[in-house]
Each structure stands twice: as C-alpha cells, then as structure tokens.
Amino acid sequence: MQPCHPSFRRHFLPACRALVCGLLLTAFSLPAIAADKPVVRMADKSWESIQVHNRIAGFFLENAYGYRMEYMTGESIPLVNGLIRGDVDVDMESWTENIQEIYDKGINSGAILDLGSNYPDSWQGWLVPTYVIKGDPERGIEPLAPDLKSVYDLPRYWHLFKDPEDPRKGRLYSSIPGWGVTEVNEKKFKAYGLDKKFNLFLPGSDAALAGSMVAAQKKGQPWLGYYWAPTWVLGKLDMTPLEEPPYDEKVWKTTHACAFPPVQVNILVNAKFAAAHPDVVAFLKNYKTTVALNNQILAYMEDYGGDAQAAALWFLREKPEVWKAWVSESVAQKITAVQQ
Image (cartoon, rainbow, N blue to C red):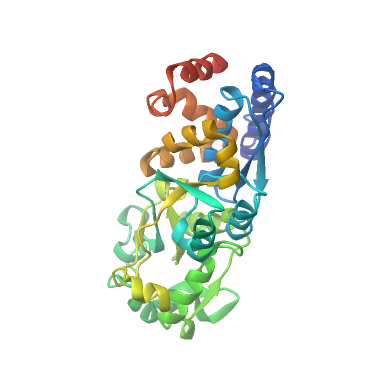
C-alpha cells in the first residue's frame, strides 16, 4: 500500500483526531457542567504555547469544575485590553514586559489580577543559525561570520542576510503585527543603528516567522531574526542568540538598546471574574510549568500537525506527576476518570 502523503498526515489526520477527541470530551464533560456556571473566556493568542495552556486549563475547568470554555482568538494588546474591560476572563501567558504599559494600567486600576508565573525561565531575543558562526562540517557549510557575536557586529555582515525584496540591505525578521514586542523590536532596531544596513521585516503570522527560520535551516542559508522560548522551533533547531548590552532599566525605558529584561510569563485574570469564581483562581494559582516541559509539549504538537488539543491531551496522559500537584486528590480522580 502506498503511504499517505505528508500533507495528509499533517492536516487531515490531526483534524480527525481533534474531532474525535472533541466528541469524546463533550460526551464525558456534559454531565459535569453545571447550569449556573458561566463560560470562561480565554485569551487565545496566536502562538502555540498559550493555545496549549488554554486547552490544558480548559480541560480541568470544564471536566472537574463544571465550566464551559470559549477561546477568543486575537493578539496580545487587544486581548489584554479586553481582559481589563471584562470581555476576556483569563490570560495564561502575559509576557508582561512586552505589554508593560497596558499591564500597569490594568494592575493599578484593579481591573486585573496577576496570579504569578506560568513558567519562570522563558527567553526572547535575536538569533542566527549556529552554522552561520561555526559552520557545519557534516553539511559542508563553512563559517560565514566567525566573528559575529553581538548585535553591533551585524552591520559588517549585512550582505549575508540580504533582503530578497531589497538586496541593497539585509533583512531582520521581527515579530508579527499586533504583538507588544513588535514595537520593542522596532525601537531596538533603530537604537542599534541597524536601519542603515537592514530592513525590519514583519511576517504575517507566527507560522510564517517559524517557517522562514526552518526553511533557511533546511537550505543551510543565513537567517537573522527575533524568537523566544519555549517553542518547538528552538527545541529542534541549533540557534545562537546575539549578545546585547546587559539589561538596564533606564535604557529600557528610553531606547531599549539593551537585552530583554527577565520576562514574566504570568497568568492574569479579570478582577471581577476572579471575585466571582474563587475556585478558578485557586486552580490557576497552582498552575506551574517550565520551559523544558513546554518545549516537549510543543515538539509533540509540531509532530502531530499543530493540534493544540492533541498536545494538551498528550500532556495530561504523559505528565500526571506535574498536573496532580496543581489540584486536590478528588479533582485528580475526575481528570483521570475522564481520560480513561
């Protein structure tokens, strides 16, 4: 029998799995949903890790606590503003420093509550494939920029990263429109004087940004851009971060010409929702993961067609020692029973 085409495995099969999982979960979940429990509206931003966390948390809230779930698609700034207004209830990944002004507004006004870190060891910055600096003998790639260490070295090597749409300059891939970090990258870009030798390119989606990195790796070509961890990409590809001046609060508040600050990837909730639903707050306060764990989850998600629900179910099945620490024994028994 001829094997199925990769696109079939990547798109059709995961969709079937998701449909079957959804039907099974609905069948198990309906008896547990109380009529007086509202819908919990999750900020379903455009990157994979938050989408998985939403569905992990949603599985608990639906199957053990009786809530119904809604995943509200959008980008950071609009959804955090929605959290402040009360249009959104929960944000599982704040990436606080990227939205600092809006975050401060919400906290200081008492409109949102910060429940603490989802994972404390996140990272973000600019990076290149390691073979650009060190080469890759197995692939026959010679070092192209052996002295490239810092963002300040980039002007000397702009020609390696030529913009296909404007070959007079190099291209630096930024984050996508609507993300809070996109404005930060623009300020860094100008503060480091890179606008003289480079164009700042905004991909249309997270998938496009990751895809550009993967495509360059497959061809052994140079690539320069922004990315963050945890992600499946950095779990699978050998990339080297470029050095920046150490983080300095005064510099950060003016030009951003320094390394990203330690990033708070925290769980935020609307304050009025929290007051009305202390059981949700208690659960989310205990919700804790790590970058290493997230990389595992996201690698699974990538291998199985980008299905966040499938990745959430994999985590629940494979990592009970993690999630059982979040909940009482009775809740753990409910979650175990639903999975069987």
